[in-house]
Length: 182
Image 1 (cartoon, one colour):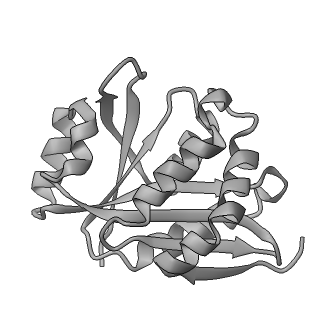
Image 2 (cartoon, one colour):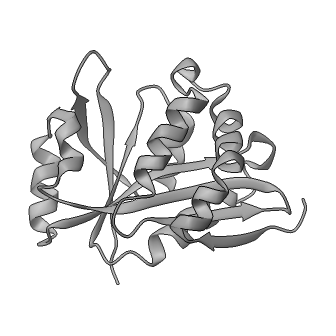
């Protein structure tokens, strides 16, 4: 395997690289359950919104072309990010209270091109992304049926913490949490 290096990008650099990141997204989700839901334009719209969030952080994996990406941002426990859900599971609400903080870090995306999976790229992206967060707890959401992502999260120590129900006709998303102990 080619030498891999990780590179952290500012929000402005991330916006400049958005097309490369969208290419990784398209390839990473091509053969997953619900692949039709992973439209490039929808991703670019979400990405444009995400880069504006507080403490946005992004890590690219390059070998030398971009082969993976992980990014996330800070949210407040009572902030507007939650407005897109009709209900928050009691388990997740309880965890945020126990963390004794009003802030969480959302790992919004972690994606690796299929040819570079199972070589530790995802784990390195995961660790680098979460290393700088000041929040005590991270949260990520999975679509039902994404067994590959579920297995990776379990292997990294994430805990299934209930389901979040997006407003509208969208299926519930699995909520996973990870303590960010310092």
